[in-house]
Length: 385
Figure 1 (tube, rainbow, N blue to C red):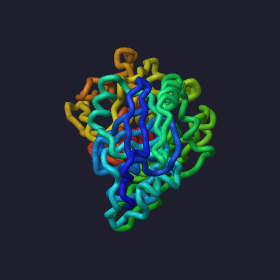
Figure 2: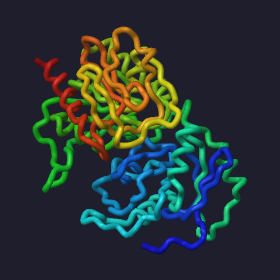
Figure 3: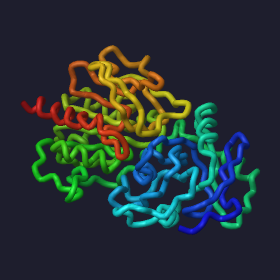
Figure 4: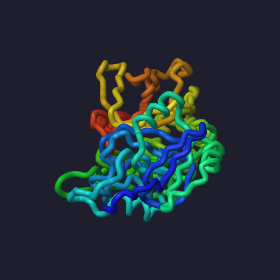
């Protein structure tokens, strides 16, 4: 790895006028976005390629970012989706038998800007206290920046409220998925004995979610976010999955909610939603969603299953939440965050319809919630019995 330059070559400007100088790596140029922080200790590549991070720059609170390099096997989608990266220490040379490329080279080849040498503790405190700020991130080898213009660019960022970002990250056309979870020593095996026909709506789906569905015995067909009720039912599914994704759920819900309401009103098909899919399902059931102060992003979030009393450590990535106070009477809250009490799960009474805010596939993170994929599969088996 090249040594860090002796002078600042990157700048992070917040809309309130706060400026951080550091050392740039990855691509050069300038971008604007909402700034969030992620507390995960591993999985930076999966985080950067998670479509849920569209419109955001990620501050990593863990300092050792880049030390295991990158490998194509760990991409959650074809290209990075997060707008940029903020880290405390510049990446060191990769040291891992799976590494195929250095993080800095990978970011540069994919047009993503990163900044190191930042006091990420100070920055994280600012995000927690003030809410997720709008920022401008610039990287120039000569270290020359128009600070006033960067601050103005940050102030001009449109933000995520009211924005439908799912259309920008969803698939262009339908496709089949049969790859299962990674397992030693063979890697990713193929599902050859699927028992349940599932339509997965892609609002920004992570590959490891689809792998978990395949590993649970599902024959998965992925449809674009804008798929209609008739397009979904044309595949005669045993169950419908609603994926994670970015942006404001209310904006995405303008076209997604009617499709889901059709499934709820006209069928008894099991439904399972994760993250944005959870929020849109709640909207279809009559609840509302709200923008959070700084959201939940990390792999150490305790969530309580209020029906069993068990606590699971989970991965989360969301800046909006379901307002549990608006849930209708036939919908039960099933999970809550032990950090702030926010809603993390719902299910419909006497119907095979449920969803969670957290990411049971992890990637990265703990595996406490893998059983939810089996619950979905069991609901399809019960309906077929």
